Image (cartoon, rainbow, N blue to C red; front, top):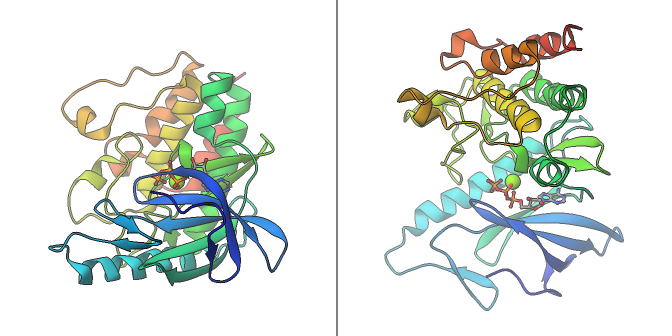
Length: 280
Ligand SMILES: Nc1ncnc2c1ncn2[C@@H]1O[C@H](COP(=O)(O)OP(=O)(O)OP(=O)(O)O)[C@@H](O)[C@H]1O
Ligand SMILES: [Mg+2]
């Protein structure tokens, strides 16, 4: 399904190997032959697509207009992500269409995702979890200050460069805040990390939905578990909060409040709550 190693994209990026795949794409490690350095390249690869030679093909009844709209939306995502000059956000350097689909190029981050890191190291101690959560929140604050939301924050979308520095990636759910631009190509929400309002159709992701996901990531860091999905919580399934300090649980609970208005209103409030010295 993935592009074979050695494939050259845009006459410039040589595929070395796939790094992984997610809901709507495949990410490759590539050599940027112009710069002489590694980059990560994400290929939009929707569910019903099949690769023939290099190009994506679709079943005869597939709505191709819809596909092309999604390809444009994928390109838009990369344009959004190229705007944030924050070191905590993966730098996006290029995007292009080829093989009947779209690609974007980003800095290659050597290091595990938060999901991989915690799976290996186990749940983190509160001070470590707080440091990481605070760094993510600072990155998310830059996104919000620029007038956007991330929309798909979760442990697989945060990389830990050299197992230390936080790098947020995948603006798959990004939307222009307070507008009607919705990213067409992703559409789906992440079951465990998306706020309850995201499961109701026609509701745009907001800064408060990112706060919910931030709470979910903090929950994951200290417990090693994915939080109970919002639709289950709506049906009354209780969250088993991790056995950390009462105050840290309180931050998670407030960030993950079911009602948007009960959450921290912005990333700074979340950061301030984390910084209060009552954890230790
Ligand atoms: N910039 C990057 N540098 C290095 N590795 C990356 C980079 N971006 C993604 N990866 C790796 O590629 C894997 C796949 O990423 P991808 O975004 O395709 O899937 P996902 O995050 O698991 O799911 P989703 O599609 O829901 O975001 C990640 O788990 C990560 O290991
Ligand atoms: Mg991802």
